[in-house]
Length: 304
Ligand code: HEC
Ligand code: HEC
Image (cartoon, rainbow, N blue to C red; front, side, top):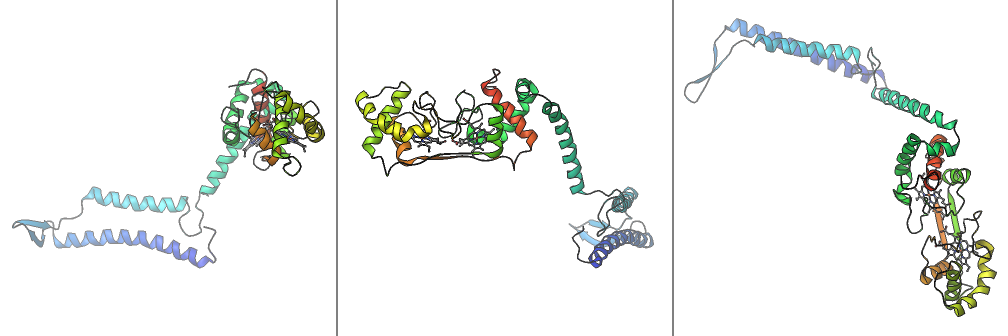
């Protein structure tokens, strides 16, 4: 109602509403008089189907009262609630206000619950069943579309329930990942490594985690790995969490362990993005999620 440019429209609308009600009441009483003057059971002169006549009886009393009560209800409503132009009503009710009050109550309730957990260590929070439930709900809302509802991930989206971390699995690191996001960049090497050599390097990478490999091709690829890949993945392929370079010597693969997948990584590179959530989630919620994610691979919380 505060959208009016001038008071004129406010008065105009209020007048229409009030005049409308007054007119209804006037109409009711004016018709009543007419029927009284005309007599109780005079007919209107309309006849159908031979002998069906329309009578002109007075309006039934109960109906009159219903009508009057409806008008009174309307007037009382207009005094209490907004309806007359920009007049806010005695109760100062507004749907916006109602929503804000509802939100405030909700936030207060949530903050009371979160306050309890803010005082606790993240690892303790992770062990608390109620906190885990809250964490899971948040996870399903904000994270499951990428990491899966069971947090086990899929191709390109890391599994969060195992002990294999790109960036580290300590609560502080997880919190940092959620707050600021991550961008894992592996550069493409197509300009310096041809397809055949890439296949040999892939064989060497497979040998690092004990997968079947051709020893002759693997040994041909080893020197390239040491000179080109070790800078990020480490000389033994154990990875580097500061860069988000995955461990290539275990059996956890973000994109797959086949020679084809590894060759593709070498030639085309990877550019993987985990969005920052500091704009979307309050610090309290990020903390609940940190505890939940940490708990998935610790405290036996996996699969919860
Ligand atoms: C748009 C997709 C997307 C959403 C939404 C998303 N993530 Fe991620 N997340 C990723 C990707 C992709 C990576 C891997 C980044 C990389 O390879 O550098 C990742 C990485 C992570 C990591 C690091 C894993 C490791 O091994 O170090 C954590 C922890 C994580 N996400 C938690 C979350 C949580 C909690 C949420 C919900 C608040 C979330 N993610 C929402 C895509 C997403
Ligand atoms: C500049 C650092 C850097 C260099 C150099 C680099 N990598 Fe990577 N590599 C990464 C990062 C970071 C990722 C993770 C990308 C992501 O998060 O999606 C990755 C991912 C991979 C993957 C996918 C692993 C999986 O779990 O699926 C393979 C395979 C791989 N690199 C092999 C190599 C090989 C072989 C070389 C050398 C030819 C190499 N990398 C050189 C940083 C590097």
